[in-house]
Length: 116
Image 1 (cartoon, rainbow, N blue to C red):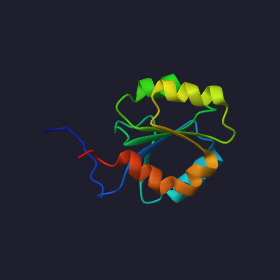
Image 2: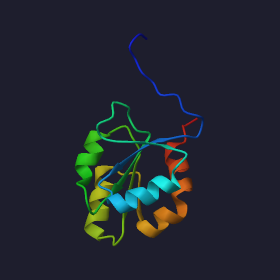
Image 3: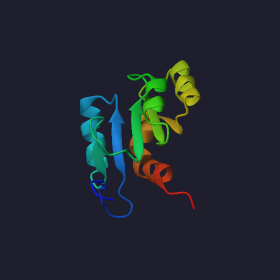
Image 4: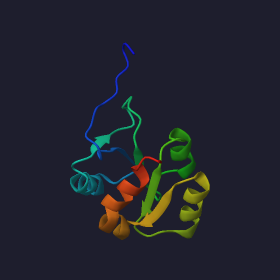
């Protein structure tokens, strides 16, 4: 298709959007996910995964903006009402920040793996 742009990344490389993530923590995540492609909300490329801080965003707004994209929510101090809101909004996983850091590669792989 003329004019269509599709990025070409190696197998296993996900395009990841960070939503509402504190800038210092975003730097840490970017280092942990250095072999993945990070994108922003200004990008025309749809992400393969959204990682969102449920304490800093409106869950419904994120899920409405990315209805076909897996969403991984996290929180440093999970408030049960925020966790429920993220689950109701359709987030695929909601984890504590410590678990996110421990298992980031496994979580990214799990949520971006194509269905067979």
